[in-house]
Length: 330
Image 1: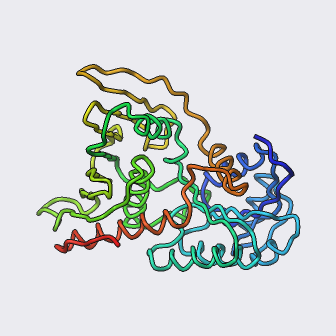
Image 2: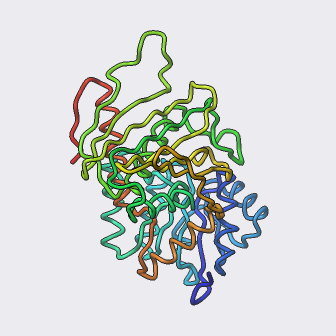
C-alpha cells in the first residue's frame, strides 16, 4: 500500500529494538521518518545514525513545527508518552503510540479528550490486533463458524524477560510489565469478541508461598460471554493460547502471544480438529497500514485511544478485585 502523498514522521523515543522495526515499516508504505526526538541528545543522534534519519531534537515542538511532518510515532517510556502525545496534539499531528498511552485510565482519558479537541487521531501500536491469525479468528467468529460465543480464554506464561532495549538501563519495572500484559489481553478480548467488560473477579490474595508475578481473573462481557485469563512470569515458558468457545465449536490459536511468527490456528467442530492455513504478515507493516486507513477515515481494526481507556479501566478493576473487592467497570 502506498499513500496518496509522501508523509513525514517524527519518531519520539528511541528505547526499544521494536522502534527500529517501526521505522522500517513507515518507510515500507512510502513515508519517511524525518526527525528523532529524545530527551537525551546523544541517544537521539545514535538512533538517527543507526536508522538513517537526518534530524534530531530534544524538544518535541522543534520537530513538530516542521511543515513536512504529518505524523508522530511515540515509542518513549510510558512516563514520557503523555508529554509527546500532548505536544503532537498541540501541533495538530496525528499520533501512533505504543501502548498503553498512560499508566492510569484517568490520565489516558485526558489524553484522548485532548486529541479529540485538537482534531487529531490517537491510535495505538497493538501487535496482537495486527496478527493475521487473530484477525482471522475475529472474522470467523463474526461469520458464525462456531455459533454463539460462550467464552474466551487467554493463557500466557513465561519467565520474566524485559523487552529488548537499545540501552540496558531502559527496561521496565517488573510490575509494570504484568500490568501491560493484562491491558494487552483485555484489549485482545474486546477486539476478538466485540464485547465490553462489565464486571471483574480475580484472586483475592496470593496463596502462601506463591510468587506475586502471576494473575488469574474472569471478566463478564457485555454480550454475555465470559473472559478468563491466566498471566504469569513465574511459570516455565508455555505455549500461549487464545480460545474462542462457541456453542457449535471453538477456535484455538497457539503461540500467537510470545512475539514469534510461528503461531497456529485450529478450528474444532464435531469433535475434530482442523488446521486453518494462515500466513502471518509483518505486524509492524500491518500496523502502519491500519493507521493510514484510519487517517483516511476508512474502517479499520486498529486500537484507538478510547479502546485503551477501556482496557486500562478493566485492568484497574482486576487489581482492585485482587484486594477482595468486587468491582464494576463503568
